[in-house]
Image (cartoon, rainbow, N blue to C red; front, side):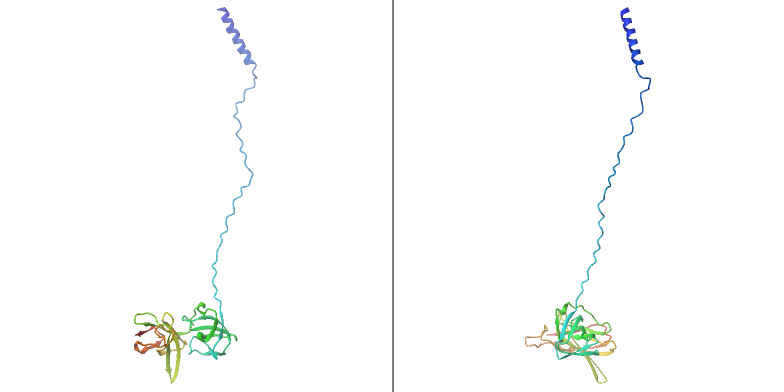
Amino acid sequence: MKKYINLLILSCCLLFLAQSCISNNEMSTEPPPDPQVALSTATITLPPTPTEILITPTLTQISPLNGQVKVVSLNLREGPGTIHDILGNYPNGTGIVIMSQTPNGEWVKVKTNDDKTGWMYRSLLKIDGDWQTLPVEENQEDLMVTGKIVDSTGLPINDITIACLQIVNEVEKRTDAVSGTDGSFYAYLPSNSTGIWSVQVVGVGCGSSIASDACDYSGYFENYGQELVEIPQIEPIVFIYQE
């Protein structure tokens, strides 16, 4: 028993000596420093913003056509009709520039080599190129007599010549028009035109749908192919062909 007590006393002494060897400085209880986040100095390059491309539509320019007078002489007129004033007369072979056409292509607007602008009858010209590509232009200052040629079923008839006539003080004024493939015709009168005009069927072309191989026809036009129109015209004329 005495031996056991001595061992206990010895253990306590050893424990006391061990604690006395520890430095009087207190152990640090501060938390570890916060981790440092290294900020990158690299520059981030964003892809360039695409530039908006504006596409401007290109307007198609219709170039004028060159041409020449192909008859002995041809009048240049102020408007697209034989009643309009004559601006000049040009001999065979005279070069011109063709700029536009009337709706059915009968008349074309031209510029001459002496710098005059007016209208000539298309079929009396030699045109270098396709005249059907020319822009359509109407003389805004003119009065117009218009109508259509059809058969009894309503189908259009082409190549029919129409005359617009007026006689004042025994002086006759006349201008002609020819029906196109859709049967329509357009006759242009000067802006100072007034009164009653007679509109008549006066010819059938060999290229008409009602013409035979012998260049004649067997039917007739209602009302003798004649109508009276007061200028300015209110409604288009319709000429009906009966077999």
